[in-house]
Length: 565
Figure 1 (cartoon, rainbow, N blue to C red):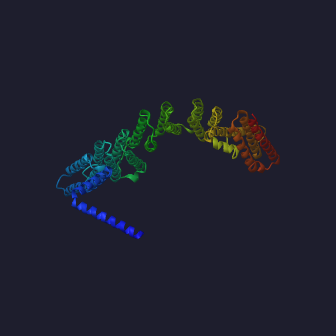
Figure 2: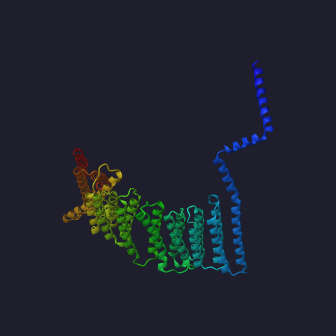
Figure 3: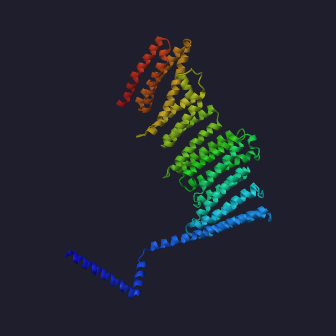
């Protein structure tokens, strides 16, 4: 019975469907209205997207076809130039005008998503680049200087036409083409200076455009190519004369100017963006400024006159002073600290470089030692960790320049050195003063604690080395010092310094002094095993062991006094 009911329901549904179909056939006007209403209910965005896709697809082939016509015209110009029927300089002028005409067309194109602008700009670059190559290298119509001027003018016209925000594709294509053509012809023609000048001009244009947010990131490409070109200039002309016989001779000014201008351009842009516009320095600006400075230094060191190194050191002093002034006057109170840290790093590096090139080693050590003391004192007063770090860095540089580390090693463990140089004494005194001037802050991290650890370590090494020399001089007044006397003097000095450090750390609550005291104990243990016990005189070995035992007992007890207080 249930099966019969189901069959009846299916039959009724079938009959109803047939009746609806017959009705639609007999009333076609109503069916059309239903279709229209259905189409009106489709999402407007989906319909628009379909139309946009169809329009973009329909514009692709015509745009590419027009660009191919442009390339056909370029081949026609090349054939005319090769045939000699028309003056080749005239063909060159027509080719340049033809390439610029395609640039204008690219700027006026209004196709979807800038596709046409990119294609037309690419056609313009493909017209100009091969033509410049052949007119200069094959037909010898244009000199390298004229080709460099044409490439620079072409890039300038492209930037003027692509100044609008939505013309980034034109700028990228033309800047890339201009940079590649300039670098390629620089290598091929061996006329380096004209194309370096063109690339420097492109650098100025790209930086100017980026300052007004119209560069679209092209300065990265231009800067990279310009760096390579300047480096090639320095690399080629710094080699022997026999390796560059086919390169033109350049004066000292011509060799120094490109790298100097490159640094001046990027340094000016950094100052304008950070000091004038108060914007945060970017990673690109930081890296590129450093590269430009290194290229300038290389140029001066290779091609400068005999006194150029001293002048370079004085320039570094001036730049370091400028960086210090800018970082404290403009950037210290700024909400964003990146500029402060970058300029702080530059100021320290410039000061170290200035002392290296402008001062002899003893005066370099003295200057850095005094600078370290001044930096730490100012850092404590101004509560500036950056200056504390600079002070420690300068103190390390002073210790290396004076030979303090080498002197300490020989005085305490190696062949006995002679009379210490006066610069070592100055650095030792400054190390003691730097540690005394340093002020520990509550809740310091281990990185900040290192700023106190380094000065006391250098001070302890210097005092121990000078003390050992002093004890040996006293012994020499009574008898002729032997190996055992030297070992005893060293042991007495190291143990005494360890005890003084432990007492000072406990008395003034300076944890770094206590740590250095334990380092001295470890050093004395190694020295006892490798020097004192092998001296051959048991009485001196016994005295050394006694002093070491007293030190082992005394240092922990003295250090524990500080915990009680």
